[in-house]
Image 1 (tube, one colour):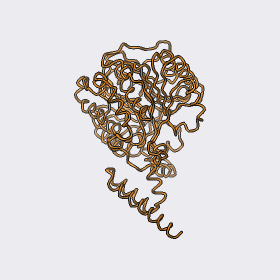
Image 2: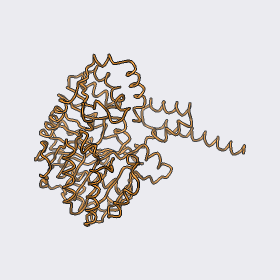
Image 3: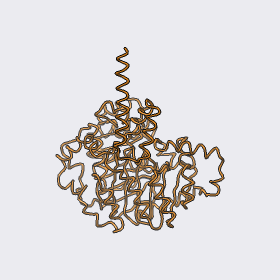
Image 4: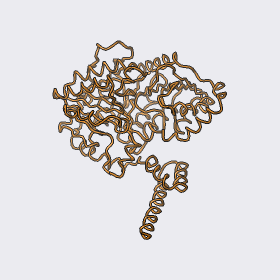
Length: 494
């Protein structure tokens, strides 16, 4: 047995040394690398487990190619010139204002889609409105329904949508459904098996082709996107999941899109679907019926009335971000937008735990005279997120950033608007997890009218908010400061 102990000990030492070498050669932040090396040196077993769960930097282009090779092959074989031109032709980039063209180029880096025109957009701020619109669009689907959600619950509203998906599958519509694994871990397989029996094609996110990595990828890298594509012509994305929390109780923001930008949603969905081993029809062109041509607006009128629609040639760019892509595009885009704002920046986010580059960009903008406002919920949905959000208030307030805590219904919106031109609505929170770990998708809109609508929505929410002042914030009890600082130590894990 002594020789076995020696072999196991030697093997463990080699694993520790190998991991330290991997950390040293990683291109990440040096302070973060030193922290991981110290943790592994002091607590080798715990440190190794934590590192493999949350510390590995998979943002490498070779890893993306390996993981997505099936999609890359299928797209390469089946997408014709018109589809490629629509997604990556950059024909509409010149329509973007000159000062934002570099942003559009940045957001199209690493395989993301380019700017499209011909889009009709509705900003949805009512969960009931989204539910009614979505149900009607699903009911009218003729060819296919593609749905990808972080949360898909078992409550009343979710069950109704589930029944609709099953009904459409029985009618012969191809229904493909991706559910996030960890977020819905309480849902038993029977729930999805019922959908499968009705003809719905269901795939679980995430699937690892490397079994030893399966546990780590499922725990730490989550599909946080909210995507619906119907017949390749109607798309939904934003902050609302499928749950009565969003349909009834919470305040959130979502988008209903018709036009060429739907192709970006479709491309992102198909990437995830095929990567997860989902099957797709050989006729790839039917998933992109617009192929660069302006689409006629298709807006349902039987849901409750709500202002927020624009019926014009809206420029939009769909930006997905994967943790294994070469660059953190959504993070970079957010920092760029803050750094280049000249008049105002209004941000809504339920989780305000900005990484250092984002925090410094907000401070720099405020110190240079830009009106920077950040809105977070007064009461978070997770007990640790309230103190985590507030742990950044002092640094922001001292720089002149105005902070508003929305009271009443929990606000789950992830929105950004600046200078009456640029709007951003999507799934990404302003935190380390969304910027670096999760699969996210944001829509960037280059349009004056849409920006003004988005600004008015923020100002309307201010009526239900209390502004936090620096004086009152500095006088908060010491024990609250302590709790906030302790939780902030785990900011990268939240």
